[in-house]
Amino acid sequence: MKIAFVGKGGSGKTTLSSLFIRHLVASGAAVVAVDADINQHLAVALGLSEDEAAAIPAMGEHVAEIKAWLRGTNPRISATQSMVKTTPPGAGSRLLRLGGDDPIHSKLAVEAAGARLMVTGPFTDEDLGVACYHSKTGAVELYLNHLVDGPGEYVVVDCTAGAESFASGMFTRFDLTFLVAEPTRKGVAVYRQWTDYAADYDVALNVIGNKVHGPDDVAFLRDHVGDDLLCCLGQSGAVRGMEQGRPFGIDDLGERDRAALATLQAAVDGRVKDWPKFTRQAIEFHVKNARAWANAAIGEDLEAQVDADFVLGEAPLATRPS
Image (cartoon, rainbow, N blue to C red):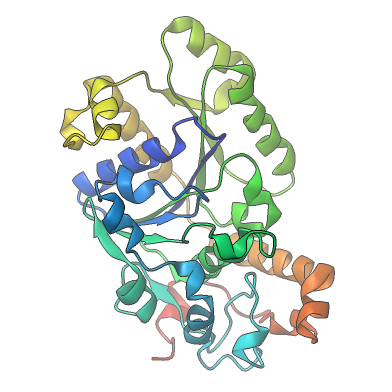
């Protein structure tokens, strides 16, 4: 399953995604974690030092190599330079298996809290005034578009804050999106943005209440998000200690918070994998991007990259090129 964590800045999105990653690892699951947030705090939240986090190779700096490998022998892609962030796989494309021995996982992933962690990389001084962060998250979108995740496998992506994911089609790349909301008017405003923007795209969304102090906070969230509210977490001394750099293990959480994480996993595991929809949405956004800007930028008709007979899943994975 592919899972996104979203929410406004300061909502606790990165902290909760790191706790969920630790919970999944403790359950024995295979997990790839991806930090696609401009602030890049997931590595530290998973227990790495600042120096270790800074040494992780950035996906955003290896986009050309990622494209070259994923292109494989796909005849619809004229050149690596013709691939854009939305280019969907087709016959001949190289597909990814969770945590496989491909050069993307082997060169760009590091171990963190029992998961394999990849990062987009921070926004650098060289990017200021000449680039947007979506040029880096495009590497994540390509990764997700070519990844065949199987039963008991999870990809957890800590996304950019607010509604930034709607600047591309990446918001459709997940089996379930968890929106972290504080019980405040600002906290639920991002929820309203998400539901408005995603209304026409069949995006599965649950809300996690965070920093909840009591029944009044729960009632506030329920009034604003209704049945989308899945569970709530309060203030945790163990989590605060983790954020201060003290040693932390998932068993340090209180029973109520561990039960909330189990509720998240149950919601994810209850989703039915829909590869045809996943492929259809990838094609839809690729065509939109091609018509809006990519055809002009690349100088060719990128709609021709669409393989109408291809559906991502286990079957094409078995015939992928080496």
